[in-house]
Picture 1 (cartoon, rainbow, N blue to C red):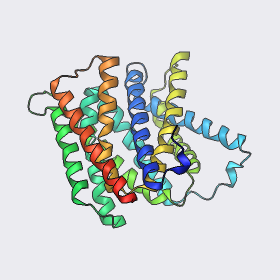
Picture 2: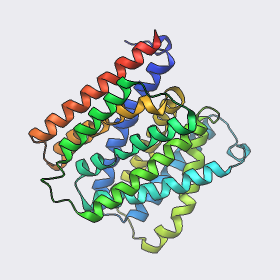
Picture 3: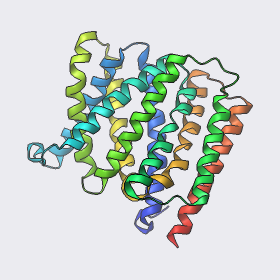
Picture 4: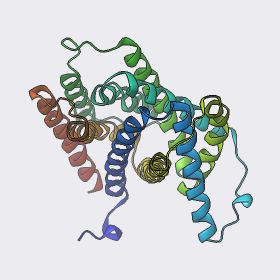
Length: 292
């Protein structure tokens, strides 16, 4: 068994990023399942109110007075607004195009986040990191097959907008990750997004059967886990190094979509997946060299 205490900062960050990608893939799968029964706005509110209930319960268990949490600054408000729009556009894209294709398009996010990391945080992109990122893009294109698939343009546009919003979100999280505890970050974002999404949810509200209430609770729990690993990764590793690793999410999503929805996993998908895994291995080797 691996002793986490013996792992250094970079290794912990990379493991956290991989776990973040796995939980985000599971979250997307549950969102896609929910779409056929629950409106996007209602899902958004229930997901975040579930997360708020869970984080409040954790604070109560730790006997922490949540009302004494430090003030909510402009970064939290901006982050929650971007998060709200990111979720809405992402869910709409899932309702219009296959989840594997939506995930492929979403890989503009790590590329944009890397560029922002270079300009805002003065991160350095070595040649191996650039090569690994390019390989990830190639793998994404192979899986997407843009010249052979007829993809709904509206779905592509929503996926592109979501990718841009998530890049901005990740940069804000990066800026907050070193100073703010992850649980506080998750709690405040859940609170603000619940407030933002409540009017939209009420406008389309429909009674839910019990199983979908439990599904939304599961979405909230997965969202907390996802936030924990994302914040942990961003606090340990530069955005530039996380960029090629981020393409690994497509591997998780493609396999889950094939198992649960029967979405195609043809020879192109397999080649693309293997290319992405190889690009991820390059990034991991780079991180190991940086530790020496």
